[in-house]
Length: 291
Picture 1: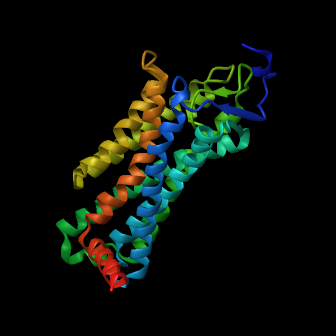
Picture 2: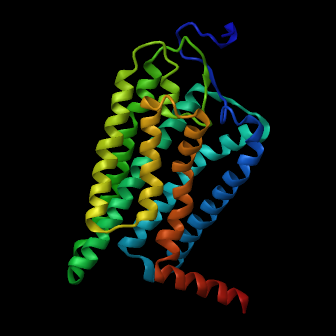
């Protein structure tokens, strides 16, 4: 390994993101579906926000949670896609150390938030089905606001140890990250010290938070497409970094991108277009514009 890739056991000023190692020649082609997914996610989630804001009849708990999910999708996908596309298109691989940790924080923060929001939506559905006459008195606007605040605080607090621990480790091996974004374990693996605290914490959050959230969601209702798209690839990625040494690196990185990018594209379709009230408002909006 060249001396230029060595540090003196201090935090490097920058990291180098490789994109998808082994598929560098196909970066431009891979960027096409990535870009399409991002555009669909942006348009779909902004459409949800616009329609809910425009229609007073949609100012209800389910749609407030849907708006929170849309905002989370927008932040999550925007946290990684612009930098990933700059690697694919312009070979812009450098990322500042602090920017890398910030990206890491946003990824884990909004992953936890989105999981919590889906649980809140499942709770809303459960109350609507099991206690419809008291739905409006149970899930009042103040209660919805408190649930939203709890979801945000949970995500923010759970994500704090990721960059905090990563900043503490000394990096004296290399500053090259074999990934397309600052994935937690991909970064701390570069440290020249025992990183078991980071590794165990990441596994604990993955199993306890996601496991509990999936359980609560499954108890109230099943939306298999979103659950499978969100949780199974995420768990696969977490486990592969630690135990899947025989899994090709490019396959792992593609899956790691999929679990962050596909749900923001699918959520507006699963939770928005399939919701009759939003679908009707959307059709009415285009009908009026066509006249």
